[in-house]
Image (cartoon, rainbow, N blue to C red; front, side, top):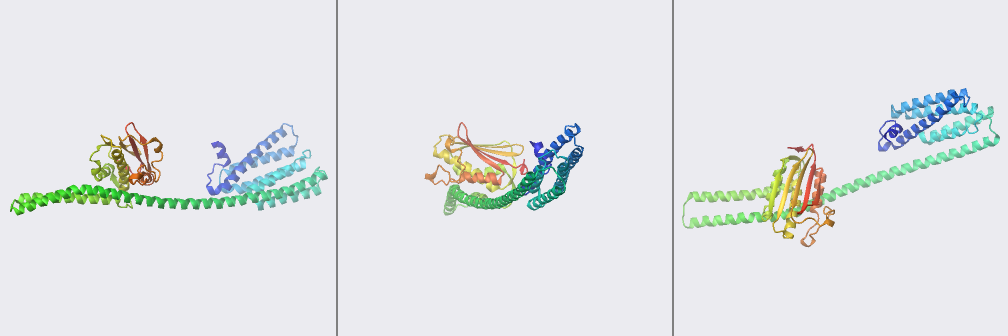
Length: 441
């Protein structure tokens, strides 16, 4: 099949806009092969005296040499196509005119002029085809007027009438093909415009959904920060009360006061870092940067620290890869998956809650597995959990956008994928980032 395709296209590559040229190459090569094969049989028949005709023998040899030379030229350059068509036309007519005179025993020899004319229409177009066929018709009329070709008046009338009908048929047939080709081109361009428009709309929708998901995550993070700040604020308040009591009782232990001030400074630094972590997560990143995957995952776990208080966390880095990408969006995916695991563990009231995080690296990819022991995903839902607006948490206000956004980020931003499956203990999500150029260890 590959050999045949190579022969029909003469070994050339054709773009989508070269479909007509590709068709003509295939038709021309097929025509050259078939005619060469049968004229070769005719030539050997002449040599073996099955058809004792020296003139036809010489002309078929000439035609075969011209055909082989044409096949060779087609394989050299695409631009030789028209030149080869002219060679084929001249050699064919030379052979057919010779047979017209020497093949008086062949009552069907005029048929070859029909085939030659039709080939001219298909290979070059209507204008060339009309000129070519009119030349054939006029030449045969003149020859028939001056030489006895052995045709009866009835045969002559039949030939000229059918030839004129054939001209009309060929013209309108090609007209229809060209019209359909133009309509197809217009339709194809319209479909391309529609695809571009739909792609732009989808990108805008994905950006809007990503922003919605960020806002939803922002609310969750604000709640997490509120939990993280509550204890330090109470601690600071207790320290200030102790310092106030110390002043009231006129205790002048400078070391005591310095220690308390340092303790307050440490707590406020921690609170400030929480804000920086929060800002970094939702900051739009225009350019990709190198970041350590384990550091990014640890930052996510720090942000979700209060939600993980009653959950046993198993975190294993088999390797410590870094990646060129958008750190905040990577963290967004991890937050979505881990937050879902936390929510399922709590909703199902699992007694010994566990989450397993594992990072692996291969030659061209990084794999991050996040698994819980909440019993797994309902089988009928496993194929739709990444669909937009699919949620099993409508009563608690679930939007169904989390995992959909995670998949968009994984596929479009990380050149990877995110998949889900059930394990003997629960659900496992595997984030795959296939990007060998951006991968570093």
